[in-house]
Amino acid sequence: MEGFTHPSDAGRELDELRVRAYGPDHDIDGDPRALARLRELEAAHLADVERRADAPASESSAGTETVKAAVPAVALAEAQGSPEPGRAIAPLSQPVRESSLRSLLGRAMRTWWGRLARVAGMLVVAAAIVVAAFLISAPRPDATLRLTAVEADDQVRTLVTSAERAGRYEIDPSTLRAYGSYHGFNVWSGVNAFGSPCLVAVHRAFDYLSRARCAPFPADLIVDVSSSGDGLDIPTGDGIIRFIRRGDTVDAYVYLLPEAD
Image 1: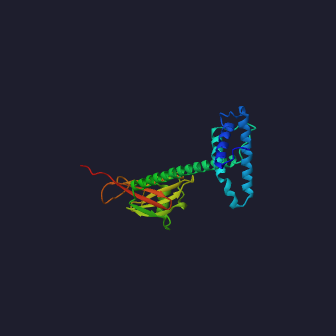
Image 2 (image 1 turned 30 degrees about the vertical axis):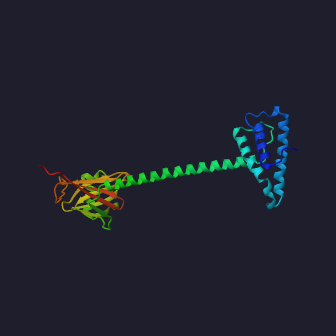
Image 3 (image 1 turned 180 degrees about the vertical axis):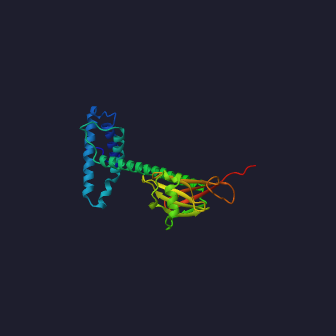
């Protein structure tokens, strides 16, 4: 056996022969002497690895430099191209490949999750800005009427069932519920013969049903009463009041007409 005068020399020689044997431009088949030398160094390297695996930790440092030198060569040979079928693969090549694959996969996953987190954060911020802008720009009700325990009396029942404006909706008087009054109007909700919710504005002082509206769920129930023809008296001027039912509450919005010059 020749050439094992220094571990680093053997390691470099083994690296060079492995590249010639396993690299993309392998030419060792035409060099019987180099091929025999490669087999000799591979056998010596394998024996050295097995010896250090069985030896105590204090004795295993002798071949450390040879092993460290062999690992880069194996990685280089694999990066340049896979060996031909049937060629021997160095014992350390598989762990190196698996370690590199795990490292690349870990970096890819961290990058993907990082980008996903940034996109999700941007979407949350954008949604918050839209909601805030909507809340700021949305008009606020001038009053909110809440559901009460007041029952409909004969006056209200008669107006709801016989008035021309409400009669066509066929509102069931037994379903009427009171929401209080605003600017002289009593607001009631009910259900008609078709199962649709209804909203009614009654002016008791004038014994008059101003407006009634029914719409199938989940459409908004909106009733507008005006200062012209509905008996509305707004101290600050002419306009309309819009009642919008929102579950157990009714929001009231006052819209004044611009004064004539």
